[in-house]
Image (cartoon, rainbow, N blue to C red):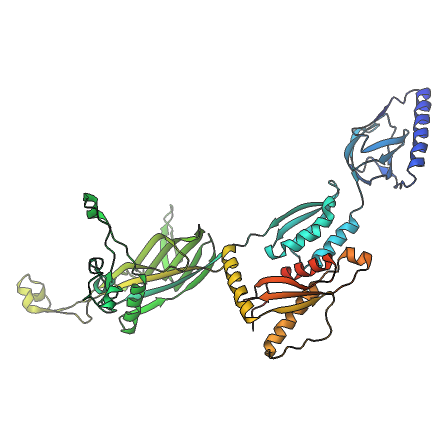
Amino acid sequence: MSRSNFDTKKGRKTFFAGVFLFFCAFFTTHPGFAEKALVDSLETSEIHMLKGEVVNIRVYSLSRISVSDPEIADIHDADDQELTVVAHNQGQTPLFIWDEHGKRTIMIYVLQKKLDLTEIRIKNLLKAANIHELIVEQNEKEGKIVLVGEIPPHKKDQFDLIVNQFDEDLVNLVKDLQVDDLIEIDMQVTELSTTLTKSLGINWSAAQNANDSSGSSSESEGGGGGFLNPRFDEDLPDSDGSFTDLFKVGDFRRTSILLATVNALLEEGKARILSKPKLVTKSGEEAKFLVGGEVPVRQTTVADNGTTIQNTTYKEYGISMTITPTIVKEKIDIDLNMSISDLDPSNAVGQDVAFLTRSAQTKLYLDDGQTIVLAGLIRELESETVKKVPFLGNIPIVGLMFRSRETPVPNTDSEVVISLTPRVLVKNREFYARDTKLSMEEGKTSGGNTSAETKKPSTSRPYYSGIPREMREYVENVQRLISSSIVYPREAREYGWEGTVKVGLLILRDGTLAYALIKESSGYEIFDEYALNTAKNTAPFSTFP
């Protein structure tokens, strides 16, 4: 709607007469309008109104006004110092004003209803449901309440139950909380005084001798030769007589024997464990550890003007490992970078230290719980002492008569062997479904049910015959936890409904709720649904005592 042309007295009288008649008729049909205080058009750029509300706006020698959408808000009275705006429907529309201060624009936002009480109700319900992860705030421009945050999976059902009651007043921006899987890396780093290549062998004749009645059972299982010199009975590759058969490799399955060999070497005193770490990290995240220390390393820098600058940095030594496990299609992809460094005094220059380093970098693709052994980090230790007569011992050929050689410490070869076993700590839903189904079957045979009575916390303590005191306290604690989380349904409160619900629960040893069911209905579906959802959303519980 547009109002303009206030130049002639006749036009002004006609304008005010028309506005006055419309204003009276409007209030006759809308007696509930509420009028706000005067708003200065120079000091505001936004006006927030409820449907049916009236606002008076101060202007200065008004010459022209215009409203883009009169269906949302319209002008019902105006003179050169003041104009009146009435809100019709929810929405927003700009109001344009021309006066002695020039052109100005005021955005008018019309709300369907006041959201303060709705916001308080939503916050109270979320608090009663133990949902504290969300932000609840009003957006006056949208005329709605905005929910922002991430909801854990075990609280999703109760959250949906709450927000569905206020669907028209909400902008739901809540996302499901993504729980990343945790991966445990169980490792053992062992240094052998002899290499595995000297202790291990492979028996490729196993497939040919599989039906040989004279063969011993221990050798056919892949452990012949003893722990310190085992033979591995491997399957020969498939052969069709072609030339490519010469390049085929059989099926290796030697991990368990390799580990047994390393353990046997430890028992024999031919090996020592350098480190046995257990790392836990999220899928796709990097984990690091260092077993060792740091030594200072001096660095000398000469500037352009000839000034010498010395800096001291610290370099790590010992066992350093960086590992990044990632779950890919029910397998574990591992990026491994390992370094073993020792101080090497024999190669030190002055006060500068030297390092002897062995490193390995690889990518692995393993099953959950599969063990792999990495070897080949070999170090040769040689020692020799030369005694000679000065000058004569240096003469070629003849000098052999004037010098002697001896080995005070036997020459040895050492090898670092790494065993690595990844395990997924947080399984996917299919695993939980299998575990829950198995536990439910066990619970049915053992009768391991726990019942909880809801509506109001019970003041009388139930009697459990033949149950240990720790388990009785555990059951009572679960009952109190569920009872304290019960929210009395608003609809039931309005109609004065009352009832008692008995819910049966099957709880696994680790506190996971396998299932919940209504054992005795209250007669009201809303009570039964609230009690059942509360029991589910309260889980998981603490582990069994």
